[in-house]
Length: 206
Image (cartoon, rainbow, N blue to C red; front, side, top):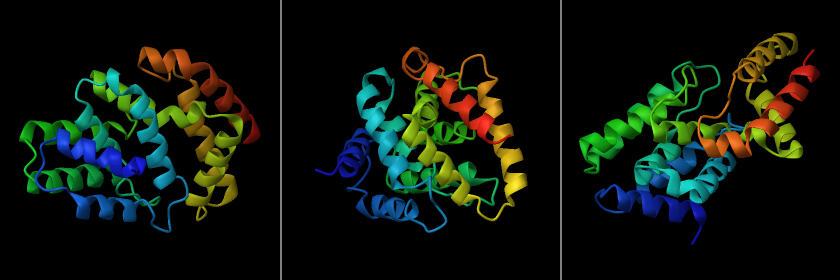
């Protein structure tokens, strides 16, 4: 079975949702294939879900965390500032309509919203989800370079000088953190590589 289909089936069953959710799953897959996306694509979704499959034993509520990953970039407009909020709202509305328990829906909403990366996560599953979302910062150099190219393509409408200034500020914000990753696994497996990637990327933007 395709890894995406398997992930969806397991999460849907784990949430005790009605039916198979195939139409919602297909709508999400189509969303991740929208033409304005270059990084926030099915590639990113697959990478997140593949890493979660390795780390699922660390999750307290794995079905909810998996579904939050499916929805965390469901809405993506590079010129908007409310993508996570709209993604969380889509998750809540859709899951409620399919009979998912209110407490689970609320938790999934909160997990999606934490991917705004405006505050450090505190709850255990939020920490794991954010570490998975940010694992790209610790990617092998070739994948990290591809990621930076993909981000630039998503912001092709921004003039180069302004993009370099804004991107450098974003990357420096992560580099300045005492710890980028919140889980023990992330700190052990991602922290050093992410710091190295960030420093190279920041230097290239000078």
